[in-house]
Image (cartoon, rainbow, N blue to C red; front, side):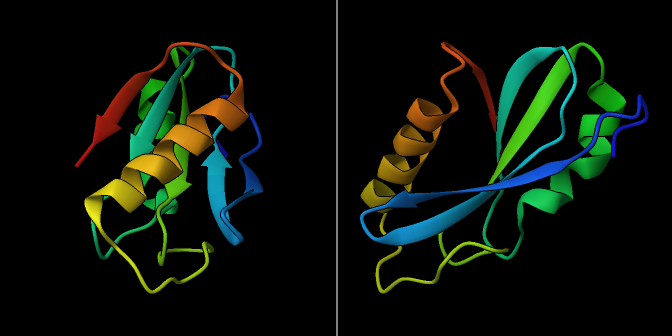
Length: 101
């Protein structure tokens, strides 16, 4: 939950037969798509989401093989890019700022 009381919502969507998970930290702000590094997951962005609210609505993807997202046999750069493109399209929020580490 963010400091402003917006509930964090976990969502799921499918890409090429794989289920990917994301956390939407909510709020009225401008959408910010957050992408974690290896050995991490979407929940790592909870403190950032709280700090940036209400100006930003942080939406974080559990990248393939991390958090609540399905594991897969391929972890190539093109795979990650395709996942992010599908995620952005699913969100239907238009242009977004992207934060990654």
